[in-house]
Image: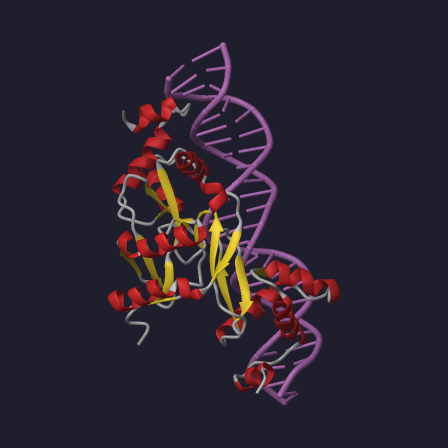
Length: 136
Length: 136
DNA sequence: TTACCTGCAAACTGTTTGCCGCTGT
DNA sequence: ACAGCGGCAAACAGTTTGCAGGTAA
């Protein structure tokens, strides 16, 4: 059962706009903002409004098709839930971003779960700090 | 040498407004927003503008007297740098916040430094997830 | 047919900026 | 005296919302 059927099974409709949002996210490398998505869609469908993109990201997130993360600015970044999960290192000085495998974050997640009963989502926010170059 | 002298030594002036910002932060328990600070100051000094609070937080941060963190919303939280540093757990469902000692985060910081040369500031962003109650 | 969804315009929140007169040093 | 600073009003970015008509199922 594809996403479209699954969405319908959940009372949602598969519209052109939603398909386009999912398409852009499938092609995207990483860290796509709502504005990126909107701009990309408007190149071929100028009538599609940014507010529709925002509404659809929210709706798609509610059912688990997409998720969002926060790097170190005020902008929300989106990805498809079926893309590989990873952590982020963001340099507060030069702004560089590096992806890291989740397994590096696992021990902390395990400890927080054991000691605090807290199910941490360590892919949700970037780890901020100084990259190798800026630290020297 | 107090903060005031240190500030002057760095070419900054100690104004009433700055003293009030530092006072509010000294009395604050945790996670104070610029709006909190502004509201608190305006109770006794109604003419002091929020923009002054924002400008002063930024100036005080540049010289290291205050620092900011991000919980899971769009609002910046401030604290005095001389207050004890700690990590944060924020529940994405019920919004509850828990402080955790930095030492829990140390092993990850150490690993990121060793394997990626990255100096992580793990107090800067909250760890988001599900608290014990919401996870069940 | 009828929820659900969309485009459009406007509102909203948190924060930043330009201007110009004021004040700490 | 004079650079830094503050108040005020306006701008700003990212996002959300109300409405009325449109469309998937």
